[in-house]
Image (cartoon, helix red, strand yellow):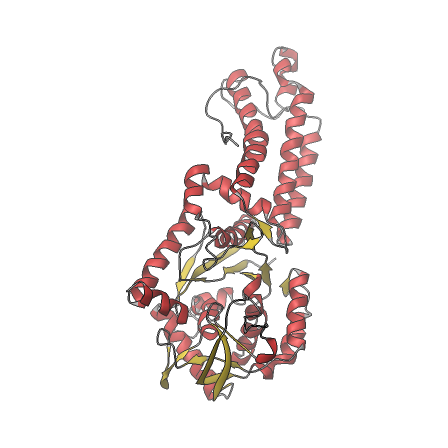
Length: 458
């Protein structure tokens, strides 16, 4: 086990506030960061906002705002939601920050000088929703984007291109490395994409003003993927006078991203790093989407769910628990407020809340509020606890927090059942059983005081 652990979310696109799907990614990454901190690693959790591009330029113009003012507001809103969710991030990178802009320009210049970037012209289809150019052979009927199924725009403009094709064999070799992209189904998708052949990709625009200028050709702005993907190293001080964090934490242990951008992280990002002569990340987790009514949650679809009212109504712990417990590893998951309420009532209020309430009430009632020394137990709960700890560790190492939580709640259920089996409220009436009573975790059938998780009306 490494003494450090560097984990990142994707940087969230600053065309609107976070919705519940973004929150799943943040909570997932945060749960893994907290696990590794608990294991003693020095953890660095990075999140932030992607603030350049045509979509933001258009959004700001439609709102009558300068782009910088627009992204300042959105970045503030993203940080607010992250803080309300209890995300324990160590850094929040914004791609409009000087520390990022300067480093990206240096990266672009270096790739140009060593011949990995060249000036060319692009003519073809472009999806401004996904910030992606598409060759004609991959466009869906009706000139629709093969990724998001929305209308493409025909564009023709001079552009600098990155020699992605040069690194095709190296990327293919990375993709067959166990654990480089998980889950396996996502890795197979990436391999199929690479085996179709990789074209060189556009890395600058002349039709988008809102971006980082190419330092030696300011008529061009640096296109999204060199700009956005580089955040994972620019946030660590890569290429600056103080690269202490970079030397400490790179390569990243895990990039946590949605499946729709896994391709860019598993193909383009490693190629850029190889071109720079830098190590590639150890792992990329391409999680599924959180759907509502069977459809991906999306700002453009208008089916977003604001997490802040949910946190106010149900509490941050209930929201975090629901997101981690309900989302499967790999496939898409489904969000519903009814499901959140049901999980809160069943797992938190009934099972965990009942166990805590019984335990604390017994301590209060029978031993005057002082936790007794452990008595001569029969080892049943000790064994169940050891088994749960092993299962949690195994599932968290496999990036499966939903299964880790299921293992924990099997222990909660076993403890509740053990209370019924031992009847500590009866033992408390027998002085001769005092030592044995100390080995039972809970006791009384009497309930008083505010419960840990109040039941919610379904």
